[in-house]
Image 1 (tube, rainbow, N blue to C red):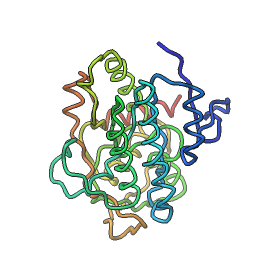
Image 2: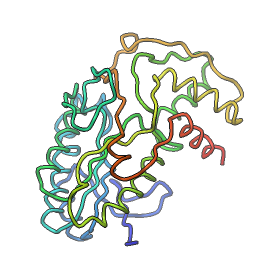
Image 3: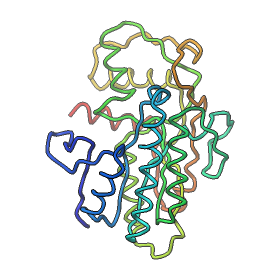
Amino acid sequence: MGEVIPATRDGKLANGNACERIDLADLDNLRAALDRIAPDLVINAAAHTAVDRAEDESELAQRINGDAVGVLGEWAKLHGARVVHYSTDYVFDGAATRPYREDDATHPLGVYGRSKLAGEIALRDSGARHLILRTAWVYAARGRNFLLTMLRAGAERGELRVVDDQVGAPTPARLIADVTAQVVAQWCGDAAPARDGTYHLVASGQTSWCGFARAIFERAQHAGLIARVPHITAITTADYPTRAKRPAYSVLDTSKLQAMFGVTLPDWQSALGDVLDELRT
């Protein structure tokens, strides 16, 4: 196993330790960092992910989510390196009636989705060895995400209104990391690019945001993380207008990833249980 060199925008890890500082909005800084570090493999988990704010920051979103990914690909192609890049369900419009496959037509609804699709295209066009892993509805035991927002809001209020007509598969960041490690361990042994390309990586099954919220509170109470469960009222997307339009259907078909790399993806309920266990410790 080679050396892992983490990088963040401010040069600090979550625990406060120092690391490499790379700002994807600064393409010259990115190129200089790549030249200095000279990685064999780049795993890009950074992005402009503020979906609503992106509508007013289209140039910044394009630079981070699109142009910077192209720079990674160009550098990797030139130096014989590989790139693993995370993308999103937002490249689709959510009008499907079955889980999206990797080769389904893309049609992003807003700036964020368009910028992420631009990054995918730039990486493919670079000619670098690459994997693009599309994921969706990501949450974790730390950071800012739907799980922690619900737990905080539930502690403050007795009733919550949650959208019930957007459907997807809640997927823990730790699951994404674990599966990525399994996939990369195999892929880096491939001399030929037969398994290069785009894959979908989400937990199995599906639910709505409202269904996810109810599961969070029921399981959190059972785990002793909360004393009471707030009342959850199901609402429609129209009842909760946002700056950016969200896909109504974000379920991704993971058959290709499972077949090509032999990985198993747990259902979203059991994955949620693992994250709540992490919060207890």
